[in-house]
Amino acid sequence: MSQTQTVVEPAGKSVAASIPYYDGPFNPPDIVASLTTARCANWQSVNVTDARPSMSSITLDKNGFQYVKHASALSSPPYTVASWKDHAIRERINDAEITELAKSVTGAKKVMILLATGRNAQYVEPENAPARPDIYANHDGPLPSTRAKGFYDGMDMGPVRKPHIDWGTGGIRSILREWSHELAEEAKDIIEAEDEAAKLPGGIEKNYKGRRWGFYNTWRPLKPVRRDPLGCVDYYSSKDDKSFIYWRDIPGIHGPFRADVPLTQANPNHKWYYLSDQQPDEVLFMRMFDSNHERDPEHVAGAVHHCSFHLPGTDGEEVRESIETKFMAFW
Image 1 (cartoon, rainbow, N blue to C red):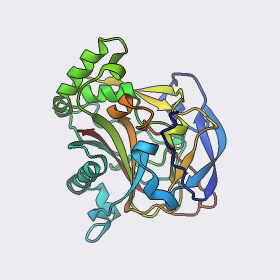
Image 2: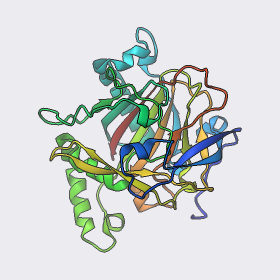
Image 3: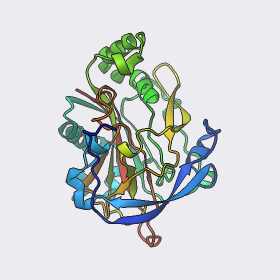
């Protein structure tokens, strides 16, 4: 790591947690293997540092994640937690709020919301969870740029226990090209510049000259987090990691396309963080990809490994409820 890069280490207290790192075939045989803690899991005891005392010093570029104060209109009357399940209300208010907040935090000129995911159930081992069909797999007409999951009746989702990165770089590039006509049209110049760079020695990473773009995720609790908090690994404690890959098929404009989901292997160098008693007005931003990272990986953090973890002594607390919103950003 470059000596000019300083890894911010918050001074908060730590809690002991057991993390089920992935430990199985390089290509997991099924989605259950990539999610379950009952198999293909290497349980490790780790210290997870409370980031609250040093929230302001943790940034996307230094750490790969960042906590931002922002109160949603949906967190105040006349709205309730149930309002987040109303698609029209959520899209009208949450998507607009995240779009403007993301622009403010990242400096992006344009933000496109791709996926909102609601989680409002306890953790259940995937083998025992009901199947959740992809409602977009047989979608009639053009695929929408903004999709949602976990908000529909019978499709309740709980926390994800196995550490992972939402999408790998290759998968994100496929999403840019295949997710929707609207997204592909916005990124037309980026795709052309990447395709030209790919023809040169060193490929896209060494030769891309187009405008900056990135893929990010926000995570907002819908009520104070008393159990199953979300933990993040400081990027610069994981930058040399080699992840295992699970491939997922995603509905796209030219039919299903494949995207990789990196699964995290155990690493004693990992530095884990969480925000104690995270409130609905404390939004977590996580970087999954940024073309600026490829240009300057020693000073611009990359994708963040993350997962929920069991907080000792919280079994009797209310189920955690949250919304995560994935978006593409363009500069």
